[in-house]
Image 1: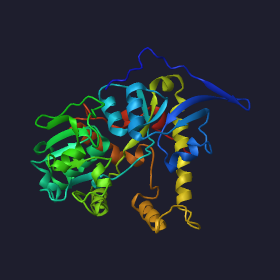
Image 2: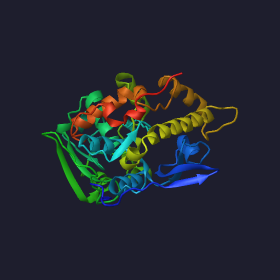
Image 3: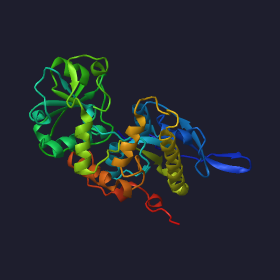
Image 4: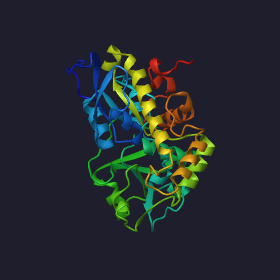
Length: 348
Protein backbone atom coordinates (compact mmCIF):
# COMPACT_ATOMS: atom_id res chain seq x y z
CA UNK A 1 0.00 0.00 0.00
CA UNK A 2 1.58 3.25 -1.15
CA UNK A 3 0.71 6.52 0.54
CA UNK A 4 -1.38 8.97 -1.45
CA UNK A 5 -0.39 12.44 -0.26
CA UNK A 6 1.52 13.35 -3.44
CA UNK A 7 0.87 16.95 -4.44
CA UNK A 8 -0.25 17.84 -0.91
CA UNK A 9 2.79 19.64 0.52
CA UNK A 10 3.14 20.04 4.26
CA UNK A 11 3.14 23.61 5.54
CA UNK A 12 4.19 24.34 9.11
CA UNK A 13 1.85 26.10 11.51
CA UNK A 14 2.84 27.88 14.69
CA UNK A 15 0.98 28.63 17.90
CA UNK A 16 2.01 31.71 19.85
CA UNK A 17 1.31 31.76 23.56
CA UNK A 18 2.87 33.87 26.29
CA UNK A 19 5.20 35.41 23.75
CA UNK A 20 6.56 32.01 22.63
CA UNK A 21 5.90 30.46 19.22
CA UNK A 22 5.65 26.67 19.03
CA UNK A 23 5.50 24.38 16.02
CA UNK A 24 2.09 22.72 15.88
CA UNK A 25 2.27 18.97 15.22
CA UNK A 26 -0.73 16.67 15.13
CA UNK A 27 -0.03 13.35 16.82
CA UNK A 28 -2.06 10.12 16.68
CA UNK A 29 -1.22 7.63 19.42
CA UNK A 30 -3.07 5.22 21.68
CA UNK A 31 -3.98 6.20 25.22
CA UNK A 32 -0.95 4.73 27.00
CA UNK A 33 -0.25 5.79 30.56
CA UNK A 34 3.40 6.28 29.62
CA UNK A 35 2.57 8.90 26.95
CA UNK A 36 -0.39 10.58 28.66
CA UNK A 37 1.65 13.24 30.50
CA UNK A 38 2.88 14.43 27.10
CA UNK A 39 -0.39 14.24 25.18
CA UNK A 40 -2.30 15.93 28.01
CA UNK A 41 0.23 18.73 28.33
CA UNK A 42 1.73 18.05 31.77
CA UNK A 43 5.05 17.51 29.97
CA UNK A 44 5.90 19.55 26.87
CA UNK A 45 8.33 18.96 24.04
CA UNK A 46 10.53 22.01 23.64
CA UNK A 47 9.37 24.23 20.79
CA UNK A 48 6.36 22.00 19.96
CA UNK A 49 2.62 22.26 20.54
CA UNK A 50 1.16 18.77 20.16
CA UNK A 51 -2.37 18.27 18.88
CA UNK A 52 -3.15 14.74 20.14
CA UNK A 53 -5.65 12.30 18.63
CA UNK A 54 -6.54 8.83 19.83
CA UNK A 55 -7.82 5.95 17.72
CA UNK A 56 -7.51 2.17 17.68
CA UNK A 57 -4.00 1.24 16.54
CA UNK A 58 -5.29 -0.46 13.39
CA UNK A 59 -6.94 2.81 12.32
CA UNK A 60 -3.85 4.85 13.20
CA UNK A 61 -1.58 2.61 11.13
CA UNK A 62 -3.91 2.48 8.13
CA UNK A 63 -4.53 6.21 7.95
CA UNK A 64 -0.90 7.19 8.50
CA UNK A 65 0.65 4.64 6.14
CA UNK A 66 -1.98 5.28 3.47
CA UNK A 67 -2.66 9.01 3.76
CA UNK A 68 -0.10 10.59 6.17
CA UNK A 69 -3.00 12.39 7.82
CA UNK A 70 -0.96 13.75 10.74
CA UNK A 71 2.64 14.73 11.40
CA UNK A 72 3.55 12.38 14.27
CA UNK A 73 2.16 8.88 14.58
CA UNK A 74 2.36 5.62 16.41
CA UNK A 75 3.39 3.10 13.78
CA UNK A 76 3.75 -0.63 13.29
CA UNK A 77 7.43 -1.52 13.67
CA UNK A 78 7.22 -4.13 10.90
CA UNK A 79 5.59 -1.73 8.46
CA UNK A 80 8.27 0.85 9.15
CA UNK A 81 11.13 -1.63 8.74
CA UNK A 82 9.60 -2.90 5.50
CA UNK A 83 9.23 0.60 4.04
CA UNK A 84 12.79 1.54 5.01
CA UNK A 85 14.17 -1.64 3.46
CA UNK A 86 12.52 -0.65 0.17
CA UNK A 87 14.10 2.81 0.19
CA UNK A 88 10.96 4.63 1.33
CA UNK A 89 12.19 7.40 3.63
CA UNK A 90 8.94 9.38 3.76
CA UNK A 91 8.61 8.51 7.47
CA UNK A 92 11.38 9.13 10.00
CA UNK A 93 11.26 6.92 13.09
CA UNK A 94 12.50 7.83 16.54
CA UNK A 95 13.39 5.13 19.11
CA UNK A 96 10.27 5.62 21.22
CA UNK A 97 8.45 2.31 21.64
CA UNK A 98 4.96 2.80 23.09
CA UNK A 99 3.94 -0.87 22.77
CA UNK A 100 6.06 -3.90 23.68
CA UNK A 101 4.49 -7.33 24.13
CA UNK A 102 5.83 -10.87 24.24
CA UNK A 103 3.81 -12.75 21.63
CA UNK A 104 3.75 -16.40 22.66
CA UNK A 105 0.29 -15.62 24.03
CA UNK A 106 -0.97 -14.60 20.57
CA UNK A 107 -0.97 -18.11 19.03
CA UNK A 108 -4.45 -19.66 18.99
CA UNK A 109 -5.45 -23.24 18.14
CA UNK A 110 -8.56 -25.42 18.15
CA UNK A 111 -9.03 -27.20 21.46
CA UNK A 112 -9.82 -30.47 19.66
CA UNK A 113 -7.28 -29.94 16.89
CA UNK A 114 -4.00 -31.63 16.03
CA UNK A 115 -1.74 -28.86 17.37
CA UNK A 116 -0.78 -29.32 21.01
CA UNK A 117 2.83 -28.10 20.86
CA UNK A 118 4.75 -25.74 18.57
CA UNK A 119 6.41 -28.55 16.63
CA UNK A 120 2.96 -29.75 15.51
CA UNK A 121 2.60 -26.67 13.29
CA UNK A 122 4.80 -28.23 10.61
CA UNK A 123 2.62 -29.20 7.65
CA UNK A 124 -0.41 -27.36 9.07
CA UNK A 125 -2.51 -24.44 7.83
CA UNK A 126 -1.83 -21.37 9.95
CA UNK A 127 -3.51 -17.98 9.61
CA UNK A 128 -2.09 -14.47 9.97
CA UNK A 129 -3.98 -11.15 9.62
CA UNK A 130 -1.05 -9.72 7.67
CA UNK A 131 2.29 -11.34 6.94
CA UNK A 132 3.88 -8.00 7.87
CA UNK A 133 2.13 -7.71 11.23
CA UNK A 134 4.81 -7.07 13.84
CA UNK A 135 3.38 -9.56 16.31
CA UNK A 136 3.43 -12.30 13.66
CA UNK A 137 7.08 -11.57 12.82
CA UNK A 138 8.02 -12.14 16.47
CA UNK A 139 5.77 -15.21 16.80
CA UNK A 140 7.30 -16.80 13.70
CA UNK A 141 10.80 -15.87 14.89
CA UNK A 142 10.15 -17.57 18.22
CA UNK A 143 8.67 -20.65 16.55
CA UNK A 144 11.74 -20.97 14.32
CA UNK A 145 14.44 -20.27 16.91
CA UNK A 146 12.96 -21.51 20.14
CA UNK A 147 11.19 -24.60 18.77
CA UNK A 148 12.88 -25.37 15.46
CA UNK A 149 9.77 -24.93 13.28
CA UNK A 150 10.68 -24.58 9.59
CA UNK A 151 8.45 -21.74 8.40
CA UNK A 152 8.49 -23.18 4.87
CA UNK A 153 6.82 -26.35 6.17
CA UNK A 154 3.71 -24.37 7.12
CA UNK A 155 0.88 -23.44 4.73
CA UNK A 156 0.25 -19.80 5.67
CA UNK A 157 -3.11 -18.13 5.09
CA UNK A 158 -3.67 -14.35 5.21
CA UNK A 159 -7.09 -12.90 6.09
CA UNK A 160 -8.75 -10.45 8.46
CA UNK A 161 -8.99 -11.65 12.05
CA UNK A 162 -12.76 -11.15 12.41
CA UNK A 163 -13.75 -9.52 9.11
CA UNK A 164 -13.05 -10.53 5.51
CA UNK A 165 -11.10 -8.25 3.22
CA UNK A 166 -8.01 -7.25 5.20
CA UNK A 167 -4.98 -6.80 2.96
CA UNK A 168 -1.25 -6.28 3.33
CA UNK A 169 -0.16 -2.66 3.66
CA UNK A 170 3.41 -3.11 2.39
CA UNK A 171 5.01 -5.03 -0.46
CA UNK A 172 6.55 -8.37 0.51
CA UNK A 173 9.64 -10.24 -0.72
CA UNK A 174 8.76 -13.75 0.39
CA UNK A 175 11.61 -16.26 0.46
CA UNK A 176 11.60 -19.15 -1.98
CA UNK A 177 9.59 -22.12 -0.80
CA UNK A 178 7.29 -20.20 1.52
CA UNK A 179 3.54 -20.58 0.84
CA UNK A 180 1.19 -17.68 1.60
CA UNK A 181 -2.43 -17.95 0.46
CA UNK A 182 -4.71 -14.88 0.40
CA UNK A 183 -8.29 -15.39 1.62
CA UNK A 184 -10.18 -12.10 1.18
CA UNK A 185 -13.49 -13.98 1.30
CA UNK A 186 -13.29 -15.17 4.92
CA UNK A 187 -11.87 -14.39 8.37
CA UNK A 188 -9.31 -16.19 10.49
CA UNK A 189 -11.87 -16.66 13.24
CA UNK A 190 -14.37 -18.33 10.91
CA UNK A 191 -11.75 -20.57 9.30
CA UNK A 192 -10.34 -21.64 12.67
CA UNK A 193 -13.80 -22.55 13.96
CA UNK A 194 -14.58 -24.46 10.74
CA UNK A 195 -11.36 -26.46 10.90
CA UNK A 196 -9.95 -24.83 7.75
CA UNK A 197 -7.07 -23.55 9.86
CA UNK A 198 -5.13 -25.37 12.55
CA UNK A 199 -3.77 -22.23 14.23
CA UNK A 200 -3.86 -18.43 14.08
CA UNK A 201 -1.08 -15.96 14.89
CA UNK A 202 -2.65 -12.59 15.71
CA UNK A 203 -2.06 -9.62 18.00
CA UNK A 204 -5.83 -9.10 18.16
CA UNK A 205 -7.46 -12.27 19.55
CA UNK A 206 -10.12 -13.98 17.43
CA UNK A 207 -13.65 -12.95 18.37
CA UNK A 208 -14.59 -16.47 19.44
CA UNK A 209 -11.69 -16.61 21.91
CA UNK A 210 -12.68 -13.27 23.47
CA UNK A 211 -16.25 -14.55 23.76
CA UNK A 212 -15.03 -17.58 25.74
CA UNK A 213 -15.79 -20.16 23.07
CA UNK A 214 -14.34 -23.44 24.45
CA UNK A 215 -13.42 -24.60 20.96
CA UNK A 216 -10.53 -22.08 20.78
CA UNK A 217 -7.60 -21.90 23.17
CA UNK A 218 -4.08 -20.51 23.34
CA UNK A 219 -1.28 -22.81 22.22
CA UNK A 220 0.55 -21.91 25.42
CA UNK A 221 -2.02 -21.90 28.27
CA UNK A 222 0.56 -20.31 30.61
CA UNK A 223 2.66 -18.21 28.21
CA UNK A 224 4.72 -16.26 30.74
CA UNK A 225 7.01 -19.18 31.52
CA UNK A 226 7.89 -19.82 27.87
CA UNK A 227 8.23 -16.08 27.26
CA UNK A 228 10.73 -15.85 30.10
CA UNK A 229 12.70 -18.68 28.51
CA UNK A 230 12.65 -16.77 25.22
CA UNK A 231 13.92 -13.59 26.91
CA UNK A 232 16.69 -15.48 28.70
CA UNK A 233 17.79 -17.24 25.51
CA UNK A 234 17.61 -14.29 23.09
CA UNK A 235 17.65 -11.09 25.14
CA UNK A 236 14.72 -9.90 22.99
CA UNK A 237 11.99 -7.76 24.58
CA UNK A 238 9.66 -7.43 21.57
CA UNK A 239 9.06 -3.94 20.20
CA UNK A 240 5.62 -3.71 18.59
CA UNK A 241 5.28 -0.02 17.73
CA UNK A 242 7.49 3.03 17.37
CA UNK A 243 6.85 6.73 16.81
CA UNK A 244 7.17 8.00 13.24
CA UNK A 245 7.33 11.56 11.91
CA UNK A 246 6.58 12.77 8.40
CA UNK A 247 9.90 13.34 6.66
CA UNK A 248 8.87 16.84 5.49
CA UNK A 249 8.74 17.91 9.13
CA UNK A 250 12.19 16.54 9.90
CA UNK A 251 13.74 18.08 6.80
CA UNK A 252 12.57 21.54 7.83
CA UNK A 253 12.96 21.15 11.59
CA UNK A 254 15.53 18.41 12.38
CA UNK A 255 15.44 19.34 16.07
CA UNK A 256 11.93 17.87 16.31
CA UNK A 257 13.35 14.32 16.57
CA UNK A 258 15.49 14.91 19.64
CA UNK A 259 12.95 17.16 21.34
CA UNK A 260 10.17 14.60 20.93
CA UNK A 261 12.41 11.75 22.11
CA UNK A 262 13.28 13.70 25.27
CA UNK A 263 9.63 14.52 25.94
CA UNK A 264 8.43 10.94 25.41
CA UNK A 265 11.23 9.75 27.72
CA UNK A 266 10.20 12.21 30.43
CA UNK A 267 6.55 11.12 30.14
CA UNK A 268 7.56 7.46 30.40
CA UNK A 269 9.75 8.07 33.45
CA UNK A 270 6.88 9.93 35.14
CA UNK A 271 4.54 7.02 34.42
CA UNK A 272 7.01 4.45 35.78
CA UNK A 273 7.54 6.49 38.95
CA UNK A 274 3.77 6.83 39.37
CA UNK A 275 3.20 3.12 38.84
CA UNK A 276 5.92 2.18 41.36
CA UNK A 277 4.68 4.51 44.10
CA UNK A 278 2.79 2.00 46.23
CA UNK A 279 1.85 4.03 49.28
CA UNK A 280 -1.54 3.96 47.58
CA UNK A 281 -2.59 1.47 44.91
CA UNK A 282 -2.09 3.34 41.61
CA UNK A 283 -2.84 0.26 39.49
CA UNK A 284 -6.14 -1.61 40.03
CA UNK A 285 -4.59 -5.07 40.39
CA UNK A 286 -3.41 -7.03 43.40
CA UNK A 287 0.35 -7.71 43.69
CA UNK A 288 1.12 -4.91 41.22
CA UNK A 289 4.22 -3.96 43.22
CA UNK A 290 5.60 -7.49 42.93
CA UNK A 291 5.02 -7.48 39.18
CA UNK A 292 6.65 -4.06 38.78
CA UNK A 293 9.72 -5.02 40.83
CA UNK A 294 10.11 -8.28 38.92
CA UNK A 295 9.86 -6.56 35.53
CA UNK A 296 12.41 -3.92 36.50
CA UNK A 297 14.82 -6.62 37.68
CA UNK A 298 14.42 -8.64 34.47
CA UNK A 299 14.93 -5.59 32.23
CA UNK A 300 17.96 -4.29 34.10
CA UNK A 301 16.44 -1.33 35.91
CA UNK A 302 14.49 0.55 33.24
CA UNK A 303 11.47 -1.68 32.57
CA UNK A 304 10.64 0.07 29.27
CA UNK A 305 13.80 1.42 27.62
CA UNK A 306 13.82 3.83 24.67
CA UNK A 307 16.83 4.58 22.48
CA UNK A 308 19.03 2.43 20.26
CA UNK A 309 21.72 1.03 22.56
CA UNK A 310 19.46 -0.30 25.33
CA UNK A 311 17.45 -2.06 22.62
CA UNK A 312 20.18 -3.10 20.20
CA UNK A 313 19.66 -6.85 20.75
CA UNK A 314 15.94 -6.58 20.03
CA UNK A 315 16.44 -4.25 17.06
CA UNK A 316 19.10 -6.52 15.54
CA UNK A 317 16.97 -9.62 15.99
CA UNK A 318 13.87 -8.05 14.49
CA UNK A 319 15.78 -6.72 11.47
CA UNK A 320 17.17 -10.22 10.88
CA UNK A 321 13.82 -11.99 11.28
CA UNK A 322 11.95 -9.46 9.14
CA UNK A 323 14.46 -10.01 6.33
CA UNK A 324 14.43 -13.80 6.65
CA UNK A 325 10.63 -13.79 6.49
CA UNK A 326 10.37 -11.46 3.50
CA UNK A 327 8.88 -8.50 5.37
CA UNK A 328 12.08 -6.49 4.90
CA UNK A 329 13.58 -6.53 1.41
CA UNK A 330 17.11 -6.34 2.78
CA UNK A 331 18.81 -6.75 6.13
CA UNK A 332 18.87 -3.40 7.91
CA UNK A 333 21.11 -2.24 10.73
CA UNK A 334 19.50 -0.45 13.70
CA UNK A 335 21.30 2.78 12.75
CA UNK A 336 19.48 2.78 9.40
CA UNK A 337 16.14 3.03 11.15
CA UNK A 338 16.70 6.32 12.95
CA UNK A 339 18.08 9.77 12.12
CA UNK A 340 21.50 10.90 13.41
CA UNK A 341 19.86 13.40 15.76
CA UNK A 342 18.72 10.56 18.05
CA UNK A 343 21.71 8.24 17.74
CA UNK A 344 23.83 10.05 20.33
CA UNK A 345 22.92 11.73 23.59
CA UNK A 346 24.83 14.42 25.42
CA UNK A 347 26.55 13.55 28.69
CA UNK A 348 27.33 15.77 31.66
